[in-house]
Length: 99
Image (cartoon, rainbow, N blue to C red; front, side, top):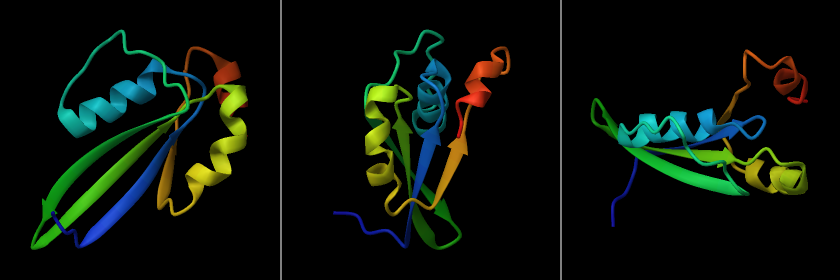
């Protein structure tokens, strides 16, 4: 089992956008699928990086934007070190939904 010097939990938040899944997969696995599926509930992606002598684990939590899962958000936020708020620049409503 690997041990890490640091572990960072980063949430990807916003409306149900294929872009959240695409960003996570591009960063963690260097994969890109322009027709990515929407996230139901939450998806996890992990990347390990080496920075100087430190081994760092980055966990990306792609949190689904559906209203029916909104009640789970406080639980997903526990222990998070940061968040990326994502929206569709061609749809102003997607920015309004980030509250």
